[in-house]
Length: 245
Image (cartoon, rainbow, N blue to C red; front, side, top):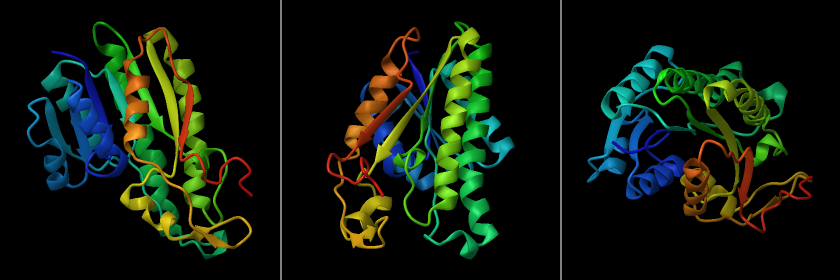
């Protein structure tokens, strides 16, 4: 039946770009996201797509979605753990707890639940194994100003990646992380007009086509399980990362 990928946050942004490329390359893709209409639009015309509306922060919904993906396609070969959100920049003492929990519940708790479901399926299936690719961020290495919730979750994703890489060895489960900088999705549009820098100034930043992220994820996913890209950084060449701050 071919290889099967699960993509979270598949209805927009990087998840949409990755989903469309994988479908074009003949992968079966289970699309997870909160908005059914957006998922259907991405999947339109592809018999190898399965739309699974899902809130990744809800355990039962995640487990049901992965069971449905395995039931339809027979197995799960790859998870792109991509769903994420953010809130307006503020210093920590001005961040409402509700905003903190909003980011934590999707970016970290949701990533944990999806990795957990994927790991369970990959461990149980025959032949055993698979690959989990976590969407980290440049912010997993260097924060933007006033970004405590987002940056904290992305640093935690690196810990999740390293631990899954270790724990997955005996089950033929590989785990890697792609750290993305300034891919021009709807979320990144403000960067073209000006965002706060470490010195407090507002400057426009260079961006890149999201297709470069999609092709990078595809490269990672199509490696044989004996090989793994542990960490990959894909970024707009001229964005402020090297030397940020």
